[in-house]
Length: 199
Image (cartoon, rainbow, N blue to C red; front, side, top):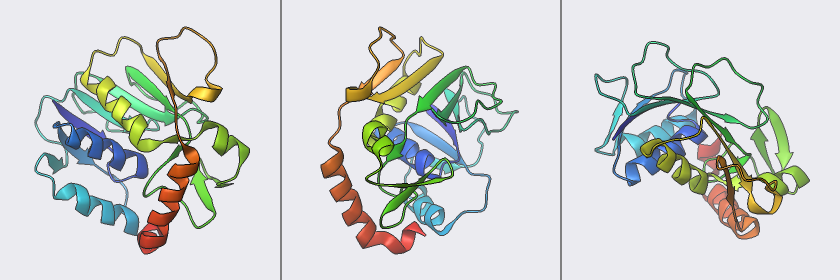
């Protein structure tokens, strides 16, 4: 399948594109803003992949994926899917499917030594909200990839950490187990090694 991903060099977009490529899908990527140093670095990783092309192609896209309600209005695709953070203000979007993301962590996340950036806020890694709700971006994007490639029966999906997932029988709620402590050790090691690319 062929997908068009907007904001493809952002933290979220990069991980989604990487997952789709690993699963053998073709991906066209667009990124409207001027690239930061980190985004330029990530663009080199994606640009080397044979199944990745930059720009909008004349293709039959299975889905056009936007982040936070921003995207090209004229793009033709079978489905328009928007990913946004659960705490974001509702954005004006004509997406047919909306996926609400929790706070995410992973390699190349917006961060410094002791804190991360999320929704315009600086959050310490020992913050109670982060520890209760944060999920690894790689696992979340693997699930998003499967939703994109499958028949999305729901119009809205939401992700939770299993230990805080509300009890309900909503098929569109997806809960994950995680090992936050071990994950953070790995992420801090990655940051120490590649901190110059995080700026």
